[in-house]
Structure formats: C-alpha cells, structure tokens
Image (tube, rainbow, N blue to C red; front, side, top):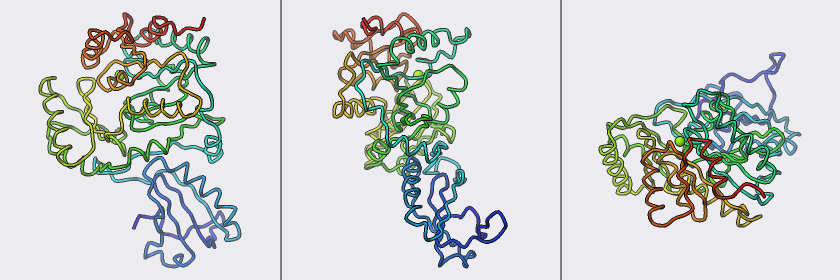
Length: 385
Ligand SMILES: [Mg+2]
C-alpha cells in the first residue's frame, strides 16, 4: 500500500474534517483515492493507490479527473492536487519522472491542438549540447543568436524546430534558462526516450503518451538495471537522468576499453532477454534504452506520423549533431545530415564513411555548433527563394 500524503483526516480552512464521499488526490506519480468506507480507519492507511502512472500520465489522468468532477459533483468530491510525493532514491527507483507543473486548462488546451495540424516546409531536428549550444562560446552565444535570428525571420512561419537531446526535461529547462534557446515545436528528451509537445496557449510541455506506451512494450527496467550492476566501472548518473525508459551511467575509461565494456553490456542484456540498446556518447556517457527508443527511432516515428497526417516537410528534414547518440539521427532515411565542426569521433567516423561511400546528403561543417547549422541550411539550399 502506498504512503498517504497524510494519514490524518483532511480538513478544510476552518479545520473541520471534510465530509467527502470520495477523495481523489493526485501526487507527482500516483492517484490516491479514499472512499467513505475508509475515512475512519486512518490507522489502516485508508488510501488506495488507484493508478501508478510513473510519468507521462499526469495530464491524461487530470483530464479524466476533471471530467469526472461533473459526474461526481453530487457526491461532494474533493479534488486535491499535491506536488510530487518523495520517491525512493538511488538507481532502484523505477519512476523518477516528475511531470511538469501544468494547469488543467493547459492540459485541456494541449489536447485540442497539435503541431501535426500543418505540413512544414523544413524541419530542423537538432541536438543541444555542443550542437545547438556551444558551451565554449564566451561571446554571448553569438552563433546561437545568429541561428535564432535566421530561424525567426526566415523559417518560423512555415517550418518546425525540434530539439533532440540526451537531457531530461528538467535539465533542458535548466539550459533554457542559461542560454538564449529558440522555442521548439517538439522536444525529444532523454536520448529519444521521451517526447514532449508544446501546445496550447501557454506551451506547457506535455509528454506524448503514444510514444511512452510504445516504449513500454517488452521493457523491463529493473532487470536491465540488475544486469548493468554487474559492471563495476559504470557509475550511475544523477537521479534526474534516470528515466522510466533510460538508465544512464558515466564511464571513465579510454575509448578502447569503454567500447569493450559497451559491447559486453549489450551482449549480457541480449542474453538476459532484454530488448535494449547501449549507447556510448561524448566519450563518457553510457545510456541503456529500450530497443525501440533512441533519437533516430523517435524521429522515424515522428516522420511516419507526419506521413499519415499532413505529410512530412516538403523541402526536407535536417538532423544536426556532434556525438555518438546523434548517429542514429543520421541513419533515418531521407534526411540531410549536419555534423558540426566540433563533432566527436563517434559521429565523425560515421559521417566520413558515409561520404566515402557516396552519400551526398551529409555536411561535415566548417563552423562549430549553431554556426554549422546555419551553414548547412544554406548548403542544401533550404533557405526560401
Ligand atoms: Mg551533443
């Protein structure tokens, strides 16, 4: 049984115990329900966990509850919304997702509008760290500002901007406070394991349930964690980066040794019957994802979705990256690739092989980070006439 927010009877402002017939409490990752039959049995923990939805279900469930309010109004339903209930700490915790605070109104609005309502001319799908954002730029992010100016003046009205990052939503929001990022139409987080839409009047990030549930099929996070614990060189990353569909580590080894560990981990996961993939990126990051996840898989899903609606971008889709977890983006059929000048060997080697084999849709840029993206848009003639 889940812990209740409080085992004491809830009281209203006058400290009078609420005479609820049915009480629904939404915490960060659970729906707790107390029925009239249990109100006098607080010592028996009268809260019943109705649903543990781990992450993306918050907005969906809030919709259900708000729709239910009208139905239950004659039952004096009291609806309380609390912040996130503390969860257990450490890598064993299954659900770390803290849905963004979003008003019910925003949730309703996001359910009624969609970035898929139009066909775009161009779609840029860009990694953030060391691709869109040059952390070495001490001149007030000059290249990023140049991209933003170009995007706002030339692309914003008919094109889509997607950020595809290894960061969680929380770390994305931190970055957005630190640097002048443009506003994305879609956010692919946690190495393609979470997709957020920015829709409705206040552009509140809303997790895409379809993608979330797609990744859940066949995924056993606990078992994958158990196997990964057999590798003592893997150090769990901070809690915010451990996601329902991503287990992240740091690995401080030279490249050759690191690749051996990556391959060994992949082998043991496969032998253990876990449909997972291991991604080595930035020379230090190791991510274990469901086989269906990843930046490339998320983009392929997005394009397929567009195919079934208004069609994929008419002039083209440009993927932009600098490191190993971006390689998948470049493998999606029909896209232009932008490898920024400061790319790691993990991506550089892949791009060089592609160019050597006659692929003409990849640009190995002369410029760093966002400057390379500007360069690529011009190189492939994607600027409007
Ligand atoms: Mg990067």
